[in-house]
Image (cartoon, rainbow, N blue to C red):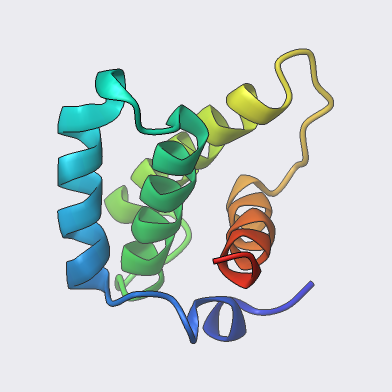
Length: 100
């Protein structure tokens, strides 16, 4: 699997994604694709967690993992699920970016 630096190298800026996520949360019930919202939110939180002092066990990492699990619930309602939720987000985000 590709490392997070490579996955996020061509991603929109964190500030841009924060703005998109805020708008997405507001508009989520009126047309925005739920999966895209959770994918971009989980990727944003993962990127923030990677810059934290504790990128695996800190508060930011916990939020990133929770968002990743939500994405996995959307994608795999009945399982199976990977043991690395944040890795799953990176994989799916890389695929999404390639198709933008």
